[in-house]
Length: 113
Image 1: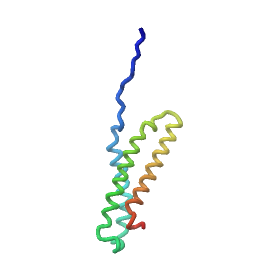
Image 2: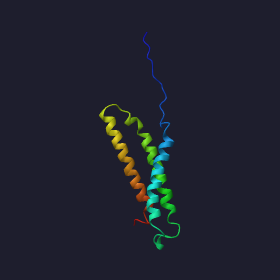
Image 3: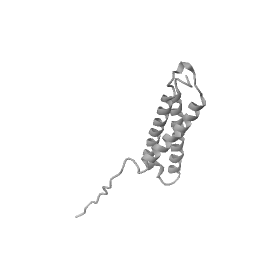
Image 4: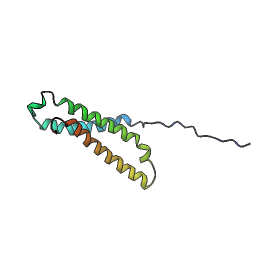
């Protein structure tokens, strides 16, 4: 009689580096938007007195979400050979584009109309 042995190892959705990646990309987003917010001085009076709150909250939160997505693509980057290298480059590019979009969304309505 033949028996079939199944490998029932549990696969985790996130890596143990999830929180570090989210904090790192969120901190990068905070530094990026802070350069614009601090450099703006008082800003345009039409923006209101608390215009800095939106970009300083939205951009780091969007960055943390990008860090979460980067963590989800870990299995693709672990593929051996050139395919894994392509996914690594695409992941880094996606993080940069995501941070750029977070900066645009954060500053939309104030510095960018």
